[in-house]
Length: 67
Image (cartoon, rainbow, N blue to C red; front, side, top):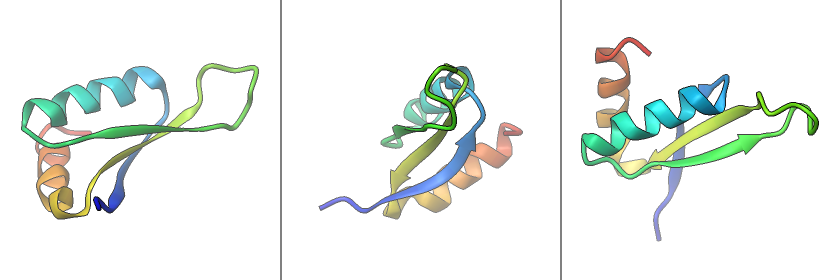
């Protein structure tokens, strides 16, 4: 069973999708989970999650790309 860990809190779906693509291109599994702050507003926060075993690699990629 995969244990998922939050590695980033994205302030919009666009940022979350960009990060998902970036990490996926590095061979890292990624899941996005919306955090509802306002049901009428599409600009929700999103958790970017990766498997626990890939947290360090994901953090390195995030830092190297300036997120």
